[in-house]
Length: 198
Image: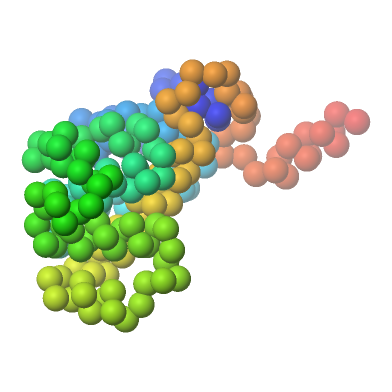
C-alpha cells in the first residue's frame, strides 16, 4: 500500500472518477493508484489530469521520444510503477535497458540521444546546463521543441519524484490511512474540529 492510502475508486469525486476512467481507457494512465492519491486535493488533481490530457501525444516531439523521456525520468527518480509501464509499442526492452548505459552505443537517433542527455542533466544538476547545451540541442531541435522538451522534463521529473515518495508499489500499511474527511480539506477544518471538541 502506498504511504498515503488511495481513495477507494467508488468514493472518488464523480468528475475525477470519470476523468481517470477516460485516461485509463485512452492509454494515458496504466494504473489509477497514484491518481486516487492525487484526488485528495481535487484542484490539483483536475489540473494535473487536464494538463496530461492536453499534452499526451499532442506535442511537437514525436510519441516515441516522449515515451523514452518518461521512462528514463521514472528510472532516474525511482518511480517503479512508471518505469514498468509502456505507453508506446515502439519501445523495446532493449531501448529501456540501454538508457542506463552510454547513450552513444545504443540504437537511439541523434535527437533521442541529445534529449535523453538533456533530461539526465536537468535531473542531476540543472545548474550546470548552460548556453552550450541549448546550442547543442538547437542543432537537432527547433526552439519550440526545446521549450516543449524542457517543460516535459520538468513535469516528468517532479511527478516521478512525488510518485516515488508515495511508494505506490509498496505492500506495507499506509502511513496516512484513508479518511473521507481529509478529502479536499485544508488544515483549518481540522483545527476548527479540534477546538469544537474542547
